[in-house]
Amino acid sequence: MEIDIEKVLNYMRDHATKYAQAKANRVYLEEFRKTLKSKQMIQAQKDGVSALAAQERDAYASPEYETLLDGLKAAVEEEEALRWMLIAAQAKVEVWRSMQATNRAEGKNV
Image (cartoon, rainbow, N blue to C red; front, top):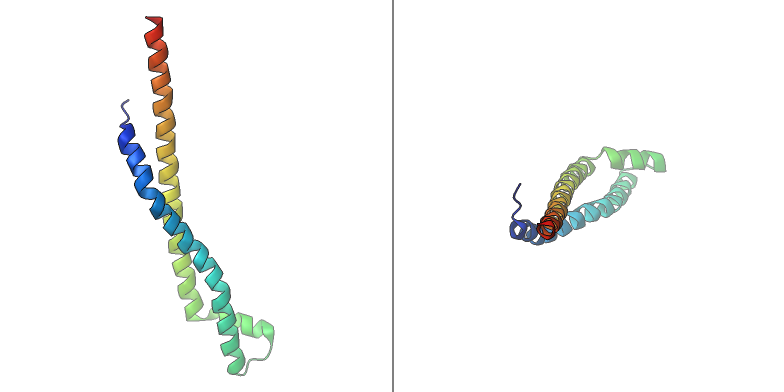
């Protein structure tokens, strides 16, 4: 089994920023969800809905909230895909290190 360590390290370097951006997007959407809910509740109140529970219900049922949830779903999917690819790359580095140690040990026994 041959591992091109330079290729793996380059992959990790190149995808670290993508992972960071994906995580930032996910966190932003999670926080924005609260803002959107508040705005939707204010709109429900302006539309004559006085009970807080009913305002909250209307906020969660709004098309804008559904759109936000779709975006959050996509952001989590992207973040997790990148995270697991980086974990796989880290595992390759560990395998490579182990192989190098084995090769060195075998060289000393000859």
